[in-house]
Length: 143
Length: 143
DNA sequence: TTAACTGCAAAGGCTTTGCTATATA
DNA sequence: TATATAGCAAAGCCTTTGCAGTTAA
Image 1 (cartoon, chains in turn cyan, red, yellow, purple):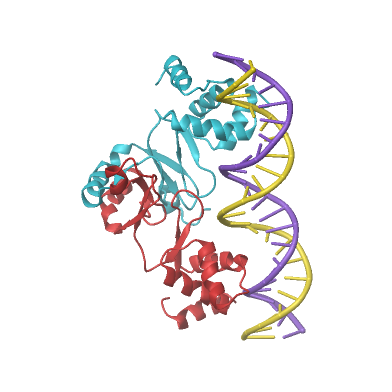
Image 2 (tube, helix red, strand yellow):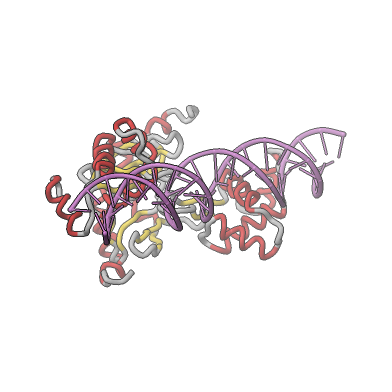
């Protein structure tokens, strides 16, 4: 489901189409790396000014169902969307709001533990991890 | 800062008071274990019907600054507040919404890793961990 | 020509803000 | 009496819903 052709046929099987708007939303997510629906919308509007935020929300939902994008809740406010290829764990500093990324494999040990003890299959990328970043620890006065 | 006397004096030093509303909000959080601001408000209104949701929000903020309560983002919608004593990691199932709790110590290994590699001080209780719970894995048709 | 899709407007959850009245030291 | 606080109403974000016009197979 990675290339355009199979994407189109997947949609076609469901009686759906790859519209320009949907393509623009997907492109925007890929280009931006991480972005809120609002940011995606801004970006899309750079190319097609009349695209509505409602369409962005609906496209993001659809693309997520298709497994092409994924959203992550970083704590406060809007979630951020990223392309499925671009998977990692987010470290959110709740002092300054900085977001760092680390490989999902860092959580493998924890994932095994949770699977054993609770039967819980961890999805490391869907929620961020919060804490205090290096900078805020070293400069507690700042912010 | 655990007992009422020192709480009152902490507030007094700041020119603030422990009002009945604030006490009711704190009591409600402690009684409910986990609760959204809305749920806290309902509970408080059981005792004092005129207390406004705005007051609940402001009280929760204040109590959080004082280190008496803590909020956790579980993904969608409103955060849940709990008493500071009541610390643990939340496992959120993004299929059925079930919330499980595990001891924070389960994340000690990860916390050490993040501290070493990124200088990041993990706060295990502020964000939930998302994934698929045992029940949803064993009964994928359900929900 | 039918079904999917978009855009628009409105509404819905959650939260904050501004203001006035009240209560407490 | 001065200051913190509560309550109320309104507004602000973020998101969803309903609907009518448009587009594409």
